[in-house]
Image (cartoon, rainbow, N blue to C red; front, side, top):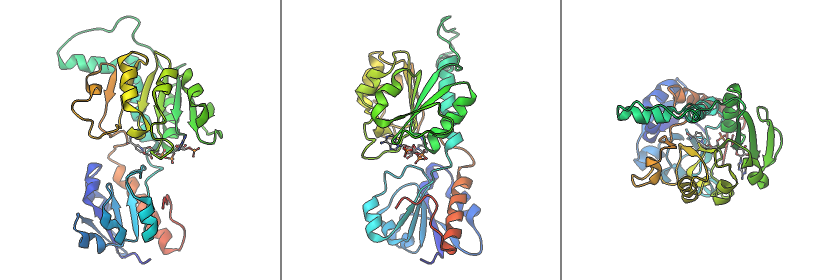
Length: 309
Ligand code: NDP
Protein backbone atom coordinates (compact mmCIF):
# COMPACT_ATOMS: atom_id res chain seq x y z
CA UNK A 1 0.00 0.00 0.00
CA UNK A 2 0.96 3.63 -0.43
CA UNK A 3 1.75 5.56 2.73
CA UNK A 4 0.85 9.23 2.56
CA UNK A 5 -0.67 10.05 5.93
CA UNK A 6 0.04 8.68 9.43
CA UNK A 7 -2.36 9.54 12.26
CA UNK A 8 -1.16 9.54 15.85
CA UNK A 9 -4.29 8.75 17.87
CA UNK A 10 -4.94 10.90 20.92
CA UNK A 11 -5.08 7.76 23.15
CA UNK A 12 -1.25 7.66 23.17
CA UNK A 13 -1.64 10.54 25.67
CA UNK A 14 -1.77 7.81 28.36
CA UNK A 15 1.98 7.31 27.83
CA UNK A 16 3.28 10.52 26.16
CA UNK A 17 1.91 13.66 24.44
CA UNK A 18 0.90 12.74 20.84
CA UNK A 19 2.44 15.98 19.54
CA UNK A 20 5.91 14.83 20.69
CA UNK A 21 5.69 11.81 18.39
CA UNK A 22 4.25 13.90 15.53
CA UNK A 23 7.20 16.32 15.82
CA UNK A 24 9.68 13.44 16.05
CA UNK A 25 8.29 11.74 12.93
CA UNK A 26 7.64 14.87 10.87
CA UNK A 27 9.51 14.84 7.58
CA UNK A 28 8.78 15.74 3.96
CA UNK A 29 7.89 12.25 2.77
CA UNK A 30 4.87 11.42 4.90
CA UNK A 31 2.27 13.66 6.54
CA UNK A 32 1.88 13.01 10.27
CA UNK A 33 -0.91 14.48 12.44
CA UNK A 34 -2.68 13.96 15.76
CA UNK A 35 -6.13 12.41 15.23
CA UNK A 36 -9.19 11.83 17.44
CA UNK A 37 -12.10 9.40 17.27
CA UNK A 38 -13.89 10.83 14.19
CA UNK A 39 -14.16 7.78 11.84
CA UNK A 40 -13.68 10.00 8.75
CA UNK A 41 -10.52 11.44 10.25
CA UNK A 42 -9.24 7.91 10.94
CA UNK A 43 -10.23 6.64 7.48
CA UNK A 44 -8.31 9.53 5.89
CA UNK A 45 -5.08 7.98 7.26
CA UNK A 46 -3.13 5.11 5.71
CA UNK A 47 -1.60 4.22 9.07
CA UNK A 48 -2.43 4.90 12.73
CA UNK A 49 -0.12 4.86 15.74
CA UNK A 50 -2.22 4.19 18.83
CA UNK A 51 -2.59 3.06 22.43
CA UNK A 52 -6.22 1.93 22.24
CA UNK A 53 -8.17 0.07 19.58
CA UNK A 54 -10.97 1.69 17.55
CA UNK A 55 -13.29 -0.15 15.12
CA UNK A 56 -12.55 2.49 12.47
CA UNK A 57 -8.96 1.16 12.26
CA UNK A 58 -10.32 -1.61 10.03
CA UNK A 59 -10.45 1.10 7.30
CA UNK A 60 -6.69 1.81 7.38
CA UNK A 61 -3.80 -0.27 6.01
CA UNK A 62 -1.47 -0.38 8.99
CA UNK A 63 -1.92 0.02 12.77
CA UNK A 64 1.04 0.36 15.14
CA UNK A 65 0.54 -0.27 18.88
CA UNK A 66 2.77 1.85 21.13
CA UNK A 67 2.65 -1.02 23.62
CA UNK A 68 4.20 -4.47 23.37
CA UNK A 69 0.95 -6.04 24.57
CA UNK A 70 -1.62 -6.21 21.75
CA UNK A 71 -4.23 -8.33 23.53
CA UNK A 72 -6.88 -5.60 23.04
CA UNK A 73 -6.75 -5.71 19.23
CA UNK A 74 -9.09 -8.07 17.32
CA UNK A 75 -6.53 -10.10 15.32
CA UNK A 76 -9.17 -11.99 13.30
CA UNK A 77 -10.87 -8.81 12.08
CA UNK A 78 -7.53 -7.22 11.17
CA UNK A 79 -6.62 -10.32 9.22
CA UNK A 80 -9.99 -10.45 7.45
CA UNK A 81 -9.70 -6.78 6.44
CA UNK A 82 -6.03 -7.07 5.48
CA UNK A 83 -4.91 -4.57 8.13
CA UNK A 84 -1.27 -4.96 9.20
CA UNK A 85 -0.71 -4.80 13.00
CA UNK A 86 2.75 -4.07 14.43
CA UNK A 87 3.70 -3.65 18.09
CA UNK A 88 6.43 -2.02 20.19
CA UNK A 89 8.11 -5.08 21.66
CA UNK A 90 11.88 -4.70 21.98
CA UNK A 91 11.99 -1.28 23.65
CA UNK A 92 10.89 -1.94 27.24
CA UNK A 93 13.74 -4.17 28.40
CA UNK A 94 15.89 -2.03 30.67
CA UNK A 95 13.04 0.36 31.58
CA UNK A 96 10.87 -2.35 33.12
CA UNK A 97 13.99 -4.08 34.47
CA UNK A 98 14.83 -1.00 36.52
CA UNK A 99 11.27 -0.76 37.87
CA UNK A 100 11.43 -4.41 38.94
CA UNK A 101 14.82 -3.80 40.57
CA UNK A 102 13.15 -0.91 42.43
CA UNK A 103 10.44 -3.22 43.78
CA UNK A 104 12.99 -5.82 44.90
CA UNK A 105 15.23 -3.23 46.56
CA UNK A 106 12.18 -1.76 48.32
CA UNK A 107 11.26 -5.13 49.79
CA UNK A 108 14.86 -5.99 50.70
CA UNK A 109 15.72 -2.59 52.22
CA UNK A 110 12.17 -1.92 53.59
CA UNK A 111 11.83 1.38 51.67
CA UNK A 112 8.08 0.95 51.04
CA UNK A 113 7.53 0.74 54.81
CA UNK A 114 9.62 3.86 55.42
CA UNK A 115 7.62 5.80 52.79
CA UNK A 116 4.32 4.63 54.34
CA UNK A 117 5.55 5.69 57.78
CA UNK A 118 6.70 9.05 56.45
CA UNK A 119 3.14 9.84 55.32
CA UNK A 120 2.23 9.67 59.03
CA UNK A 121 5.38 11.47 60.29
CA UNK A 122 6.30 8.24 62.09
CA UNK A 123 9.92 7.36 63.01
CA UNK A 124 9.74 3.59 63.13
CA UNK A 125 12.83 1.46 62.52
CA UNK A 126 12.42 -2.01 61.05
CA UNK A 127 13.10 -5.04 63.25
CA UNK A 128 16.74 -6.20 63.23
CA UNK A 129 15.94 -9.20 61.03
CA UNK A 130 13.56 -7.60 58.51
CA UNK A 131 16.09 -6.22 56.02
CA UNK A 132 18.01 -8.43 53.62
CA UNK A 133 20.28 -7.95 50.60
CA UNK A 134 19.80 -9.08 47.02
CA UNK A 135 23.08 -10.87 46.21
CA UNK A 136 22.54 -14.60 46.58
CA UNK A 137 18.74 -14.43 46.17
CA UNK A 138 17.03 -16.15 43.24
CA UNK A 139 14.43 -14.62 40.91
CA UNK A 140 12.34 -16.84 38.65
CA UNK A 141 11.18 -14.81 35.65
CA UNK A 142 8.12 -16.06 33.72
CA UNK A 143 8.67 -15.01 30.09
CA UNK A 144 12.19 -14.57 28.74
CA UNK A 145 11.52 -12.16 25.85
CA UNK A 146 12.31 -8.44 25.77
CA UNK A 147 10.86 -7.73 29.21
CA UNK A 148 12.16 -10.90 30.87
CA UNK A 149 15.65 -10.42 29.45
CA UNK A 150 15.75 -6.78 30.57
CA UNK A 151 14.69 -7.85 34.07
CA UNK A 152 17.39 -10.57 34.05
CA UNK A 153 20.05 -8.08 32.95
CA UNK A 154 19.30 -5.50 35.66
CA UNK A 155 18.77 -8.06 38.45
CA UNK A 156 21.88 -9.96 37.37
CA UNK A 157 23.92 -6.78 37.83
CA UNK A 158 22.60 -6.61 41.42
CA UNK A 159 23.86 -10.12 42.18
CA UNK A 160 20.51 -11.88 41.86
CA UNK A 161 20.60 -15.41 40.40
CA UNK A 162 18.00 -15.42 37.61
CA UNK A 163 16.10 -18.43 36.26
CA UNK A 164 13.40 -18.30 33.57
CA UNK A 165 10.26 -20.02 32.29
CA UNK A 166 9.37 -20.08 28.58
CA UNK A 167 7.49 -22.37 26.23
CA UNK A 168 10.50 -24.00 24.63
CA UNK A 169 12.91 -24.24 27.62
CA UNK A 170 15.74 -23.28 25.21
CA UNK A 171 18.57 -21.36 26.94
CA UNK A 172 18.52 -17.53 26.95
CA UNK A 173 21.52 -15.26 27.75
CA UNK A 174 21.30 -13.80 31.26
CA UNK A 175 19.32 -16.77 32.67
CA UNK A 176 21.17 -19.38 34.67
CA UNK A 177 18.51 -22.01 34.16
CA UNK A 178 15.42 -22.22 31.96
CA UNK A 179 12.29 -24.29 32.61
CA UNK A 180 9.47 -25.19 30.21
CA UNK A 181 5.95 -23.95 31.02
CA UNK A 182 4.94 -27.50 32.11
CA UNK A 183 7.56 -27.30 34.89
CA UNK A 184 6.29 -23.97 36.24
CA UNK A 185 5.56 -25.27 39.75
CA UNK A 186 9.06 -26.72 40.05
CA UNK A 187 10.56 -23.48 38.66
CA UNK A 188 8.93 -21.18 41.25
CA UNK A 189 9.56 -23.55 44.17
CA UNK A 190 12.95 -22.32 45.36
CA UNK A 191 12.76 -18.66 44.21
CA UNK A 192 12.88 -15.63 46.52
CA UNK A 193 11.09 -13.63 43.81
CA UNK A 194 8.66 -14.80 41.11
CA UNK A 195 8.33 -12.21 38.35
CA UNK A 196 5.72 -12.31 35.57
CA UNK A 197 6.67 -10.70 32.23
CA UNK A 198 4.27 -12.77 30.09
CA UNK A 199 1.96 -11.50 27.36
CA UNK A 200 -1.78 -12.22 27.73
CA UNK A 201 -2.78 -15.07 25.40
CA UNK A 202 -5.29 -17.90 25.58
CA UNK A 203 -2.52 -20.07 27.03
CA UNK A 204 -1.30 -17.60 29.64
CA UNK A 205 -4.70 -16.47 31.01
CA UNK A 206 -4.69 -17.46 34.72
CA UNK A 207 -1.48 -19.45 34.19
CA UNK A 208 -0.47 -18.13 37.60
CA UNK A 209 -3.12 -19.64 39.86
CA UNK A 210 -3.56 -20.92 43.43
CA UNK A 211 -1.24 -23.89 42.68
CA UNK A 212 1.59 -21.52 41.78
CA UNK A 213 1.18 -19.50 44.99
CA UNK A 214 1.00 -22.77 46.92
CA UNK A 215 4.27 -23.90 45.29
CA UNK A 216 6.03 -20.62 46.18
CA UNK A 217 8.00 -20.26 49.40
CA UNK A 218 6.26 -18.46 52.27
CA UNK A 219 9.01 -15.83 52.34
CA UNK A 220 8.90 -15.24 48.57
CA UNK A 221 7.66 -12.07 46.84
CA UNK A 222 5.53 -12.02 43.70
CA UNK A 223 5.86 -9.38 40.92
CA UNK A 224 3.59 -8.84 37.88
CA UNK A 225 4.68 -6.45 35.12
CA UNK A 226 3.19 -8.51 32.26
CA UNK A 227 -0.60 -8.44 32.08
CA UNK A 228 -3.16 -8.63 34.92
CA UNK A 229 -5.29 -11.55 33.65
CA UNK A 230 -2.21 -13.82 33.46
CA UNK A 231 -2.71 -14.03 37.23
CA UNK A 232 -5.78 -15.29 39.08
CA UNK A 233 -6.06 -12.15 41.20
CA UNK A 234 -8.39 -13.63 43.81
CA UNK A 235 -5.93 -16.51 44.34
CA UNK A 236 -3.17 -13.91 44.75
CA UNK A 237 -5.21 -11.93 47.30
CA UNK A 238 -5.93 -15.18 49.13
CA UNK A 239 -2.21 -16.09 49.19
CA UNK A 240 -1.35 -12.62 50.57
CA UNK A 241 -4.13 -12.67 53.19
CA UNK A 242 -3.14 -16.13 54.45
CA UNK A 243 0.61 -15.27 54.45
CA UNK A 244 1.34 -18.11 52.08
CA UNK A 245 3.65 -15.63 50.27
CA UNK A 246 5.49 -12.61 51.75
CA UNK A 247 4.22 -9.83 49.49
CA UNK A 248 3.75 -8.56 45.95
CA UNK A 249 4.60 -5.69 43.62
CA UNK A 250 1.96 -5.21 40.94
CA UNK A 251 1.91 -2.91 37.90
CA UNK A 252 -0.95 -4.65 36.08
CA UNK A 253 -4.34 -5.92 37.26
CA UNK A 254 -7.38 -7.88 36.11
CA UNK A 255 -9.32 -4.60 36.11
CA UNK A 256 -7.53 -1.31 35.40
CA UNK A 257 -7.60 1.19 36.98
CA UNK A 258 -7.44 -1.02 40.09
CA UNK A 259 -10.90 -0.56 41.72
CA UNK A 260 -10.93 1.56 44.87
CA UNK A 261 -12.43 -1.32 46.88
CA UNK A 262 -9.59 -3.75 46.04
CA UNK A 263 -7.93 -5.11 49.21
CA UNK A 264 -4.56 -4.84 47.42
CA UNK A 265 -4.46 -1.08 48.10
CA UNK A 266 -4.28 -1.55 51.88
CA UNK A 267 -1.80 -4.39 52.28
CA UNK A 268 1.50 -3.42 53.96
CA UNK A 269 3.59 -5.80 51.86
CA UNK A 270 2.01 -4.88 48.52
CA UNK A 271 3.37 -2.21 46.18
CA UNK A 272 0.82 -0.96 43.63
CA UNK A 273 1.98 1.01 40.58
CA UNK A 274 -0.51 2.22 37.92
CA UNK A 275 0.65 0.29 34.81
CA UNK A 276 3.65 2.56 34.40
CA UNK A 277 6.60 0.15 34.76
CA UNK A 278 7.82 1.12 31.27
CA UNK A 279 7.20 4.87 31.42
CA UNK A 280 10.21 7.01 30.56
CA UNK A 281 10.70 10.39 28.89
CA UNK A 282 12.30 8.51 25.95
CA UNK A 283 9.23 6.38 25.20
CA UNK A 284 8.01 8.43 22.20
CA UNK A 285 11.46 8.34 20.57
CA UNK A 286 11.70 4.55 20.84
CA UNK A 287 8.20 4.16 19.32
CA UNK A 288 9.06 6.72 16.63
CA UNK A 289 12.17 4.75 15.66
CA UNK A 290 10.11 1.57 15.11
CA UNK A 291 7.53 3.47 13.04
CA UNK A 292 10.23 5.16 10.96
CA UNK A 293 12.00 1.87 10.36
CA UNK A 294 8.75 0.33 9.12
CA UNK A 295 8.05 3.30 6.84
CA UNK A 296 11.47 2.70 5.30
CA UNK A 297 10.87 -1.05 5.05
CA UNK A 298 7.53 -0.43 3.35
CA UNK A 299 9.21 1.85 0.81
CA UNK A 300 11.93 -0.70 0.05
CA UNK A 301 9.52 -3.65 -0.05
CA UNK A 302 10.97 -5.38 3.02
CA UNK A 303 8.78 -7.16 5.61
CA UNK A 304 7.58 -5.12 8.60
CA UNK A 305 9.57 -5.20 11.86
CA UNK A 306 7.49 -6.43 14.89
CA UNK A 307 4.59 -7.55 12.70
CA UNK A 308 1.87 -9.32 14.71
CA UNK A 309 -0.92 -9.62 12.09
P1 NDP B 1 8.20 -10.93 23.93
O1 NDP B 1 7.36 -11.42 22.80
O2 NDP B 1 9.56 -10.40 23.67
O3 NDP B 1 8.34 -12.11 25.03
C1 NDP B 1 7.28 -12.94 25.46
C2 NDP B 1 7.83 -14.09 26.28
O4 NDP B 1 6.71 -14.78 26.86
C3 NDP B 1 8.62 -15.13 25.49
O5 NDP B 1 9.74 -15.53 26.24
C4 NDP B 1 7.63 -16.29 25.36
O6 NDP B 1 8.19 -17.60 25.34
C5 NDP B 1 6.89 -16.16 26.66
N1 NDP B 1 5.61 -16.87 26.58
C6 NDP B 1 4.54 -16.63 25.79
N2 NDP B 1 3.57 -17.52 26.02
C7 NDP B 1 4.03 -18.36 27.00
C8 NDP B 1 3.51 -19.49 27.69
N3 NDP B 1 2.30 -19.96 27.40
N4 NDP B 1 4.28 -20.09 28.63
C9 NDP B 1 5.53 -19.59 28.92
N5 NDP B 1 6.09 -18.55 28.30
C10 NDP B 1 5.35 -17.94 27.35
O7 NDP B 1 7.30 -9.83 24.64
P2 NDP B 1 7.80 -8.63 25.62
O8 NDP B 1 8.77 -9.18 26.59
O9 NDP B 1 8.15 -7.42 24.84
O10 NDP B 1 6.43 -8.27 26.36
C11 NDP B 1 5.73 -9.25 27.09
C12 NDP B 1 4.44 -8.65 27.62
O11 NDP B 1 4.71 -7.76 28.67
C13 NDP B 1 3.66 -7.82 26.61
O12 NDP B 1 2.84 -8.64 25.81
C14 NDP B 1 2.87 -6.89 27.48
O13 NDP B 1 1.62 -7.46 27.76
C15 NDP B 1 3.69 -6.78 28.75
N6 NDP B 1 4.30 -5.45 28.90
C16 NDP B 1 4.00 -4.72 30.03
C17 NDP B 1 4.55 -3.47 30.22
C18 NDP B 1 4.21 -2.66 31.42
O14 NDP B 1 4.22 -1.45 31.35
N7 NDP B 1 3.92 -3.25 32.56
C19 NDP B 1 5.48 -2.88 29.24
C20 NDP B 1 5.77 -3.74 28.11
C21 NDP B 1 5.18 -4.98 27.97
P3 NDP B 1 9.11 -18.18 24.15
O15 NDP B 1 10.38 -17.41 24.29
O16 NDP B 1 9.29 -19.63 24.44
O17 NDP B 1 8.37 -17.88 22.88
